[in-house]
Image 1 (cartoon, rainbow, N blue to C red):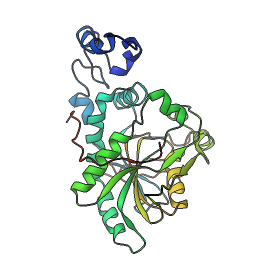
Image 2: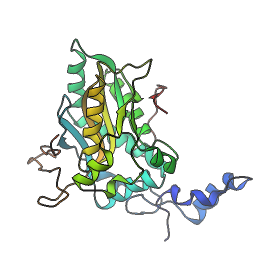
Image 3: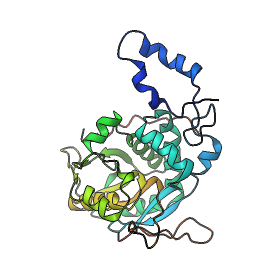
Length: 294
């Protein structure tokens, strides 16, 4: 049976006027029923087997932040990789709900809520916690037609509020880097060259960054260069980065030229690795307005 792995594959077919944009989704769903974004199982957005691949809590060292850690739900390979790429680069917006649930599950499994609560008690810190999406280049954002990490940031802010930690999503990081697809640039040198110096913090009049407690969210951790640059930019603006969350992380081979991060699972958990030198329904949001750069 032929299925479609995601709605984004057919965006150009919808046309730009008349009735076609309105009737095409119904026609498409009859002719090409949707398939799981990971394995293409019919009539699933993310099937239970593929959803289970995101059931971990893989800890990676992230120097420069309070907790010293970034946490990821899955290993970036196989069906997990297929699903993320379908969402990220093919506009499968139906994955916003499952991925929002996944990243909030990782938040609950991690030590970040405790670290955030403790940090907020410091005299130099202030709330609310800013949930900061890692920035994409302008070219990548135009290509996707949206800021794909914002639904995750909004879900994380709501989850923190449910835990009694006031939080809001905030776009306070901007990228001036080129639009190359970062997951295809796996070596430490390539990533550093592409990203280095191209991420900057943007302090807004109604949201000064000095003393602001922050947590980062990204889709994929490869060499860790993006998150390290984000941490450096936030710290340079006077913010207090506590940690980071991601859907997946790539395991880099030891002894390869791409080696920058290592991954060493601790028996009985998915934690204990290092980062170099440093329901399928959309969760209901509480009406918080994302803040930050456009």
